[in-house]
Image (cartoon, rainbow, N blue to C red; front, top):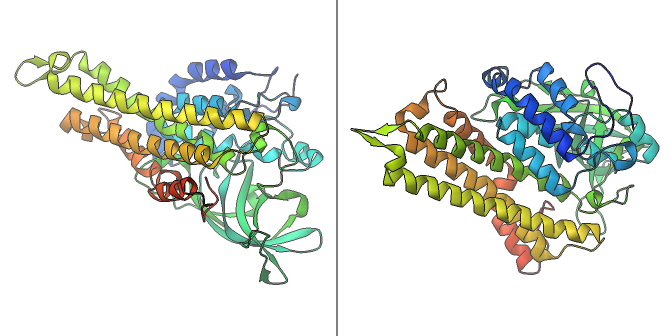
Length: 396
């Protein structure tokens, strides 16, 4: 199947997982030679975004009936993981941008094809309901200030999480809490604040964005519990968009370990002990590899268990939801611990950004762990599930 294309968004006959991974491998050298530029610009350069489009990265979740690959959650994690081995900011932006195919399933089919006329389109935004969507006749008036709009500097569409208001009053759902909606609008509708000056993930362009009095047609407003499309990717609610996040830390940690293993080939401890013969180095490398293996196994096994439920159209158990959330949390924390351990292992050279990538790896994982999925609160919410209660925050 061939889709409509533009010069910057070349799409060809349907791509599968192996095709996209193969293109990423071919594109990787171009990314690696630009990592400092990515950090300096605090966003992805336009030509690299176009290159990622041509790789098919952003079509990962696009519906099969459109000619999209509709990758499983495990495949999406693996795709992000592969990018994480190259650069954390690129992987993060890809992980966010590929949600276009997810959002498409929450729009009326004819609207979805109008919103996403090409497969390689990018959607960015902050989904938690910090904005207000005031219900009108056939539209919504939207006010909001959202933070962490990763990828908003190169997106085709931006979403914003909102609570529903009617006649100036907050509307509560049958569950007793506010009704959570997402509004979808073009980037030109928002004011993007160029304030992304951060410790790590510096190239993600995760700027704040705001809007006041924006009119959004009702067909561009949706809820995670009301998909139009019945597919495994649309049966998991908001967890569908967080499930693949583990790919970023797994990829960055893998890159850090591989870098130090290569470094060990020619490095010598004072006065004359080769690293490969050093007990200290051997133990450190073994421990890092062990932590990554445990984290990776937990992520993939827990997501596979979820996926089997979703394919069978069965509800996930609280145990499965808790296990997946904890595995995701652990992947973030383990990756930060691994990069910090290797940073310490390399010592003084690690502080020089032009000598090793370890400084960037550590900063990226320090910042990534500040995302909600990597925060200690996840353990409490998982504990609620394990004790038979629903979490107060519907993110796991």
